[in-house]
Amino acid sequence: MIEARHLRVLRAVAATGSFSAAGRELGCTQPAVSQQMKALEASVGTPLLIRSGREMRLTQAGEALVRHAAGILAGLTAAEEEVAAIAGLRAGRVRLVSFPSGSSTLVPTALAALRAAHPGTRVSLEEAEPPRSVELLREGDCDVALAFRYEGAAGAEEWDDLVVRPLLTDRLVALVPERHRLARTPPAESVGIGELAAEPWIAGCPRCRGQLVEVCEAAGFTPRIDFATDDYPAVVGLVGAGLGVAVLPQLAVESVRPRGARTVTLEPPVRREIVALTLPDLAQVPAVAATLDQLSRAAVR
Image (cartoon, rainbow, N blue to C red; front, side, top):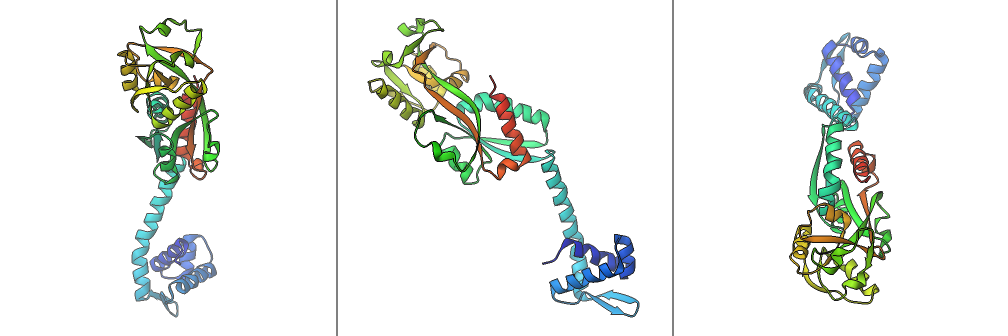
């Protein structure tokens, strides 16, 4: 294997014409230069210099290696400078995947703060619900995944191999048409989900839909789901048009303007934990660590 330090010595010897002069240029002794040249010749398996008395000239292999050494050493220098820039957050890239309500609430604040603090760091954003977002992280297709899981849900160990940065606890609220009888409930009061047992329902994403069914069945009824959509504005629009009721995370309600609909606090409370996930090795990358920090700050409310 050819080492960069050996190439630097070869170039100095070729430029100065002797080991002693190369040593003076490199700030080392003549024997040290000789030893490194012997090591380089052993690495490539062929002589690189022809020594004749006090004169020294390159072999054909030596000339070829010197010719390539300039490009190799320049590339290494560029790589070192780029890595130093990334480590110092003067450059870098972070691939972020988030679920929709996180994309419209937490992510903009976090990324704006990150850009202000580290303008050389670039962040790309894609949307995916868990568990797909977590799969993308494990498959190497993103660096940070914004995800959620419901309190008390099975599979708490599914993130054991990841770095988990807790962000906030998001409470679910009921969404009812503004002319619904429960729309007049004072904000300080809450209602049991069983009071909505006879209503038609609009359900959200598959994971949220499964959680809704579990909560309703625990309250003694099975919800009649008339509509299902992953699009939160569509859920709000359907409720606002009087076509049913829904249960949405508070974070999702914040991301849309619920025209024609009102939120109602539910009891017993149903919550989901919002987290940022990354791989252990990625957590040490400065740009990823900075992104996690800004997501944590954006979640303070």
